[in-house]
Length: 50
Image (cartoon, rainbow, N blue to C red; front, side, top):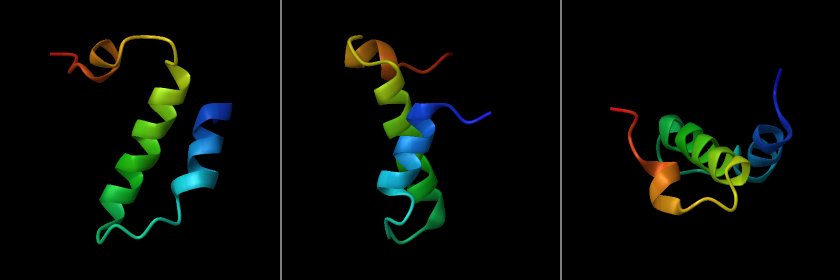
């Protein structure tokens, strides 16, 4: 199931032309994650799970 943040990110950014479809997919993923984790420090949201 697609959550509301992913749906929003797709509506906003899925048609972006960034020179490579993987960049567009990454933009959608990052926007969705940031929207889903709003209120948390950016450094905590963007840290690698490693």
